[in-house]
Length: 212
Image (cartoon, rainbow, N blue to C red; front, side, top):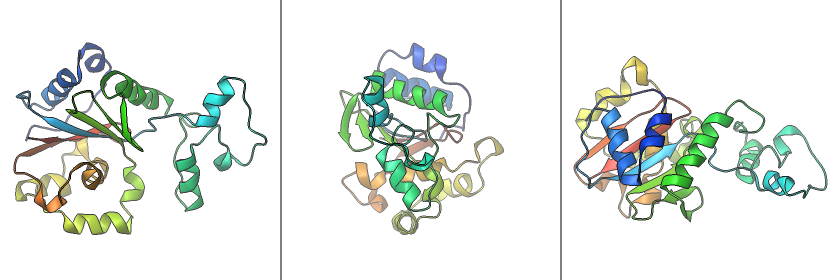
């Protein structure tokens, strides 16, 4: 199953020549040798787009009026303002200190998964890499996510890793990975094919699940 890994992905992203090469390098960091036939579903815990109003502002097009911080369309996308209305407080790549990882995530999309296939989902040319924007923190207390987990059959060998992970990987990235299951597979989560491997990244980074 490989091993958890944490660190800076800058050199890995720079050296990767294709989506398949990126997958091989990422799995290598997790001490797993890729065979070239993997299909990877990657959940990235950072904003993967900038607000439309901010992009318009860069063209000299301003909004009619500015509201409070959480209502400011320059700082937050529509989806994030929707979350604020429901008691969730997402971070802004403009206002908060997450600009570095946000731009790195957008860089991954532009280089390796440039095709938007659905809202919050991007894919490589050949479909070997699918990227989703994950937000694991609110998923932890989501009734919908709790119901999804009840439907999922987790292999016994994963139990210790999921509930007692090594100190270096005690994050909630599992939520970011699992919540993309129903949106990307045409089968129920309880019917996933046999061999799967997962590598976790710290909060604010990348987590991915490999289908074989």
